[in-house]
Length: 626
Image (cartoon, rainbow, N blue to C red; front, top):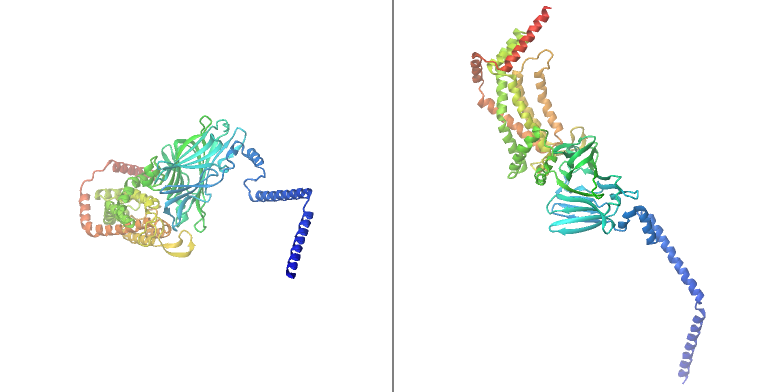
């Protein structure tokens, strides 16, 4: 019974405590006034937090202020951008489109190409080739509007749209005024092609674009350096243009600027790669500028040159409608020639006849040989073909030297006999040479015939894209130098490395000149009064030419040095064959004697020269009598 009483008391106690707690809670609950005040304080705290966040956004965003109220933000954008505030809230983003050879990245801010990667080409260190990257290029339209504002498209955000049209990829960048009013850039990317179609057009802007101001197109690009030697590469980095069918270029050194008319296309050419803008209709007027950015080989420079182009876009019904093509790819004759418009002339193969020799002889010849031979072997075979084809020139040159050597005793006797009468000595010398069929000019003319060939090849090798990154023996790249030892320091004019092919070429030139100059010295005429000592000059040339080859070709294309090395080896071999197996000095002497015995009929030139010399001699005698 006792336990039951305790349980009942406990229960009653718990009930009383619970009741007391309920009463106290009821007593302490907030009044309606207190609840209202609490809600007010919570709202104030939320507003303070919002203001704090707003201030944070303003401080960290330097391009566009953020407003607490969307309507206020739109009003601010309208005040700043006017009719072009329509796109202001569009996101700034990168859009990627590609084909087999190009990877193109477009930026909606400005609507232009932000990055151009050539997928099938690498630089000297194995890194991808980018024609455009990291803001090295800018494409901008500058124009005015009827509400007296000036806009640059690089400051405005476009909307993007990427679609497919068959195998082609169409990238559209629109700068909208409304859904049906806009400025648009259209890029058409075709499979496996470096050429893209580029269209600029506007719609419904005839009452917005201010026609009292020009619509200026500005394209600027800094050309990256991708070769081993930035100084060497910079020699072939230039701004090239097609002016009414004539190909020309700005200066490759210093700064240059030209305002031109009727330009079909212009090219920002970076040695082995080009960015070319082709107009369906020639640019009526355009200003092109180039600035050299390379100080010297020791300065670690990213860029070779700064290129700029500025032109005015014509308006049609106060709207823009322009169609271009844009080539972004290698400066390769075979590739460029596929697109017409003489784009292959973007590559400079030499002036006048030298360019023609390259275009119609050496480029096809090397292309045919390299189609089935390794590139280094193709250079050697090409050298053999050229030297054998020109061997008759070497034969004529050596024959002339041998004749002059045989006649030297008689010529010396004439000069001694008429040592006091220079004019008479000259007349007798010419008469003897004419009778014997030996003339100093006969040795000079063959050498002159070789000059166009030598210069054409000098222009061909440094710009031959086919040689780029082609290996041969110790040379990793036949279009660049073949370093076999890094010096660790720079020698002015020479560089910071040692190339082997120029050393071999210098040695071959030395021995060839040693053979030929010895023969020339024996047949050379004695020094005339007031004239340079030719024998001494030829002696100096034996050493000067190899040293010049050693120094100046150390940074040149190893393919060119390989050509000169093989060329001089072949010249030595041909000379030895001519000297030892073809020409016989006794037979030549006998032939000279036969020629001397024959009556020699003077040609018109010789007759005229003789008359002039006789008249000069007569005038001299008259002068002496006075």
